[in-house]
Image 1 (cartoon, one colour):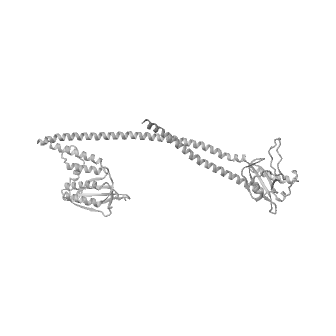
Image 2 (cartoon, rainbow, N blue to C red):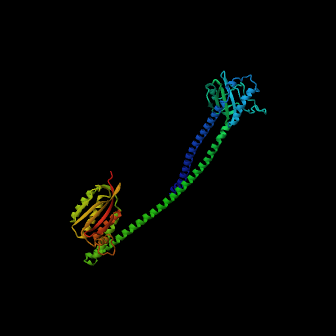
Image 3 (tube, helix red, strand yellow):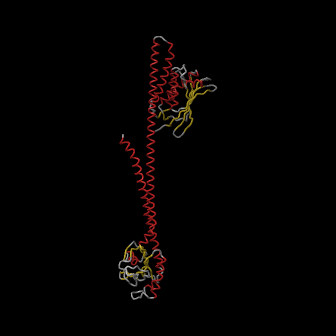
Length: 458
């Protein structure tokens, strides 16, 4: 018992932790995928922008003049300076471009030609290094630069490292006035600047991760509260159910004790009757009726309510036979649109109950023939309601008698066994929510009832 209570206390916590973990993992995984997609999209956007800029800048280079720059050209040459200055203006106008330069391919080697970009102090002498240009060999070019020089294509490189730093570079070919290929323009974006542009997405992802943890915590606490509340409700309901069961058992035991007492009294009365003391006969009959009535109710409660398919014609035929046994002629008028087969309580239940009503109508209206009209009251997709009207001769007092016999009182000393049997049947019908009542017209009196039935089930 103690172990069960411990498990009950631990289980809500485990469920809360598990739920929180699953929520965090699912949301975090989805957010992480979105983060990766965003990073890839921004990288692609930056590369597309770099590719577009380098292609546009390459169109500004005069390839014919560019061919004139050789190893013998001086850096102070006015034509060389005049062609460097436009490239530097383009570099400054472009976003985060560190270097801009032109290269050519000669004897399968890559050489710098124009390079106006200010250099870093890589040799640590306190002054910017001299820019590689005018046929300085590029010893460690990116593979994409070699591809651009050999295939004459515009391309953006993956991150690479050389002696000047770590870059992502864009390359575009340029031509002379005859359309002949001359060289390739390169634009270098430092990788640190590249990742700086990605930083806002990373910060947003980190903030989202904190929010995800908070959501998971809230979900876990909510599940913990709901589970504990549910357990409390279940425990309270179980306690109430146990109380109801105990109360029901107590009532049944009390009823059994009362019946036992009545039977004991009856045995004493019966003894007096045997010694020819007939003054107690009425009391004996009355107590016997009460015992039979009480036992019929208990018996009905213990009946297992089995539902089955059965035929309405079988019910009507059996009612006619039972009426004949009671020396009553029963005429049944049935609407043609009523389904022939139904699904519900066993046919014997309806047969016994309706037979009692037929006998009651015949006796109270003093006739030998009774008419029963059966018609459709209401029809739905799976259910329908039948209205059965059982009528005999005219009796102005019929409704009062029906009420008296269907609602007996303890002070009524005129009740006999048949009357108790009748009220037992009425109670059984009402227990199954069958509407039943009496009526009186100018020529007839009788009983009508409305039965709710299901249609035939395969």
